[in-house]
Image (cartoon, rainbow, N blue to C red; front, side, top):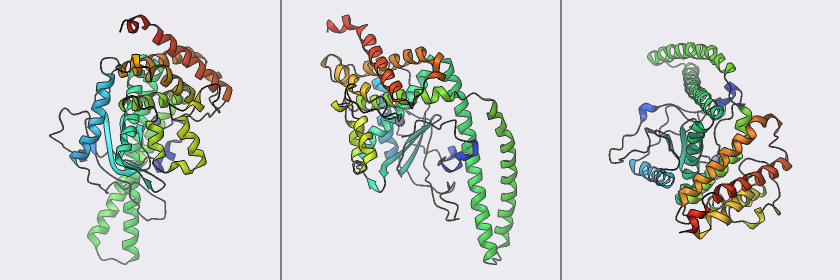
Length: 382
Ligand SMILES: [Zn+2]
C-alpha cells in the first residue's frame, strides 16, 4: 500500500513501477452510479509482452470492469465521505483506477489505484477484505487533500508530485508502446513477413513516438528545479499511514484489527517479516503499547503505539462510539499540529532512528490527548 511515489526515485527509473496508464478515454460510463464519487474510471491491466525486458505495461490490454464493480468501490468511497463529512474536506474528483486483481493498492497523485481483489504471493482473499484496502487508500487521498490546505509546503509538494506523476505516466505509456511496436516489427522482420502495410505502419509509429519521447526527455529537465520536499515526504509517511488505517478502522465501525485482518487473510502471516507488520497495524494489540513495543521504523509500522493509544482511549471508548468522523478529525488536527511543530527542524529528524520514533509517538499521543481534552466538557454532558 504505497502512499505515493517517492520523489527520490530517479526520473526514468520509474518506468518499471508505473504500472498504469493515462487512458482517460476508456472512462467507464455508469449512468446508474449517481451521484458520482469520482470523475473517471478506467480499467486496464498490466500484461507481459514477453520481450525479455521484464513485465512492461501494456497500453492495449484491457480488463473489463463492470459498473456493478464500480458501484461496490464507489459505495465504500461514499461511506467514507459520509463518515468525515463536515469536519474534513473530501477530494472532489479523485480518479479511480480499478483493476481485476493485484498485489498492491496505492495512491499516485490523485489517482487511487485499487484492485477489486487483492492477492499477495498467490494468496487471494475474499473481496470483502479489500474494502478496508479501498478505505485505506481513500484515507490517504483525504489526508493529502486536507493537508494541502493546512500546510504551504504540503501544497507545493502535492502540486509538484502530481505534475511529475502525470508526466511520467504519459512517458511510460509512450515508452511502453514504443517497446511493443519495436518488438512486433522485429518479429515480423525475423519471420520475413510480407505484410508491408503493417511493417510500414509500425515503422512510422516508432519514429513518431521516438520523437515524442526525445522531446519529453528534454522537457523532463524542468523537474530538476522543482521542490518535492523529500524530507517532508519521508517524515510524513508514518503519520499518513496511521491516518489511512484509522479511516479504514472507522469505516469498519471501529473494528481495530480490520487492517491486520485484511493482511492476515492473504496468507502473509507465514512470513516472519509480515508477521510483525500485521501486529503493528493492529490497533487492538496490547504488545504495541509504548512500554512494550519493539520499535520498527518502517512507515506503515512506526506509529503502532499511537494506534494502540488511539484505540484504547478513543476508538473503543463508548463516549466517542457515535462520533467516528470526529475521531478521524481530531487525529488529523493532532497530526497537523505535530507537522507544524517539527517542520522547521525536519533536517535534524532521522526517521530511521528508533529513539526518534519512540519520541514522535509519545509526542503525538500527548497531542491527541490534548486535542480530545479540549471538547471534554461537551462530551461529558452527553
Ligand atoms: Zn497506505
